[in-house]
Length: 359
View 1 (cartoon, rainbow, N blue to C red):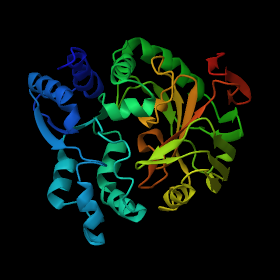
View 2: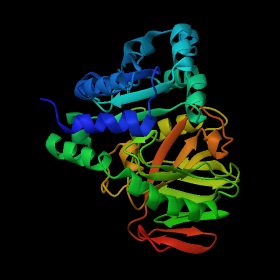
View 3: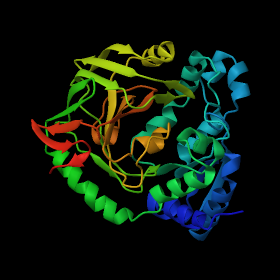
View 4: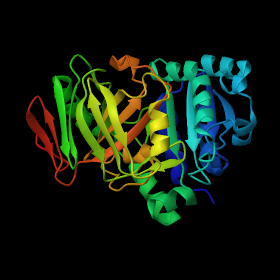
């Protein structure tokens, strides 16, 4: 059975997030379980006079994991030329994620994943440059509901409640937060096991209110690459990357670089990820969660990084359109909860305490 909310969801993706124009060629990757939303997205694209170029999304992406496990390194390292041509010339991209198993791909060797990420560097750079519209979103599945500790019906209501909101009003609210940080030199994050300072001097932030990520609901920056000093403990929530869960992650920074890293679970994979390339031990993003419809952790960064009263840091690739200069094939968001005694300071002034804005 189709959910009547899917049509509204598709309109937001096509009209608000991307603003598809007539004649555009839009690549749409979709998991099989996302078929109801895919149908509505294709209808919405057709009404806009645009092409829908549909790709099946399997595991970590459109590349089947069985192929990833067996292919020689030289093929993993280079995207198929035909597919690369499509992805470098399409007008926009959409990814409708609806996993049957959220740990799919966790049995793939880390080095193979790194080679696959390397093959996608030109496409990733195009997306993060800000010149090509794209959006990634989720569709309710039993696997996502299980990770969130909910029934499928509860999770569906939760998901739609986080995306079918007044994005114009949220943009106005988040713009005020952006202006506060745009005027700052130093940001300090204080919380459980955490005292970290970093600079956003000369860097302008961006408001995500129905943009590249859905659900939206964050203000984000690419911090000055050599500025992070101190320690942050992601003690409240685990970090999940490439199907692997890492609990109790702690980073210590010096001159912008992670010089100490640990985790209670899967520490070896954490360290391997940080050693992927020269940029994977530096920050590419500071994000401030603002979505009022997301109130609990889901083990899914696309939702968790938007929790109102949290911040997240991404190790790896920065955003060139925000002044980010860090280069990496990694971009991994990890969430820190500030709602229980944490605080944010801007140039020495407390602006958020226990998740509540004071300014």
